[in-house]
Image (cartoon, rainbow, N blue to C red):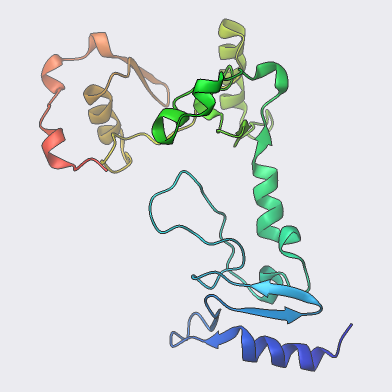
Length: 220
């Protein structure tokens, strides 16, 4: 290993910047690079190690770590940093026997039309590269949800439920039973479950529906 003091000096001189906010301590220089312990360290325009993050809205998501030089990946190649390894573990390929083939016309589509094409038996969670960001449920740590998935599997032969935000596009995510009920009545959702209570749309008062919400929240 090269002299530690020299490496720290290079790190401080080429990448490290003292923050004006005493609670933050230091941050890394945006769009910079250095060779530390024979490994190239590059930062993007946000001062984070890794690929550039698009400022406009994107379907991509990143995991952000805040911490010390160990978090940066001291002496570790970019593909082996904690962020890269965790991202790889969070995304898995959809099994070949669950995939659906695309014709040449579908493969050559662009933009939203390309995203709309079904690529597997579970299209709602399948990315354009046939990967999926799947969350698993353990019987010991989440018994109730585990049994729900098991029952759904027995009825449909599909042990998967889509986990998505509970809100209308452009509206904040629900934060209370009242918010949940209002959103439930404004959408095409048939059944709302709140803990041990089950509400059926057909049994609700139609007067609880108010179409004026479309004027309150601007669609994104």
